[in-house]
Length: 218
Image (cartoon, rainbow, N blue to C red; front, side, top):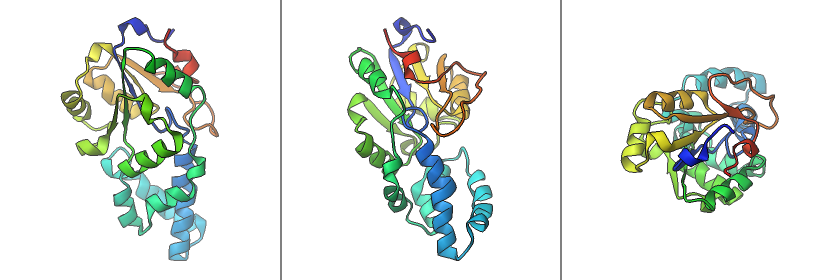
């Protein structure tokens, strides 16, 4: 057992790559957006990708990377409209619903904490219908910073009180987990396969699960 559930009062859960299959986001940003950008600017797909990859890379880990308004303006594309075009790819990872259902039946506080833009969050909750499982749904944009940035966890704790020693965070992002560790969260778990169409990751810096059956509360 990775976690002693008797020591946990609060559970913080990431969305993309943790509860939801990251294939949607990877396909959207790596294939669909470059395709639409190429069409807009009369470029080949290769030319569009060659331009966009370093542009995206420069914003990783920053609030802007997750901001649809920023990318809509920067790329001159209707990003939320494009997301709706491929929304059928949004899916829940295996055994997530069983895990959330078990948490719902427990006295633990359960919060969704995501870097996703509010519009993306709304679209994904509409498609997956997971929102009723959470006591709170928190978007990092409301704090003006991403989860991996200095100060986020302090700001979150100030607004939504939780005890560091009795809180579990599950997140596929290693930079986010490192940030949470620096803040003082002791119970940290990662995801070995956030994208169902990509190979399993070898994670050594944190406990990691293949799916939520390994983390099921007892």
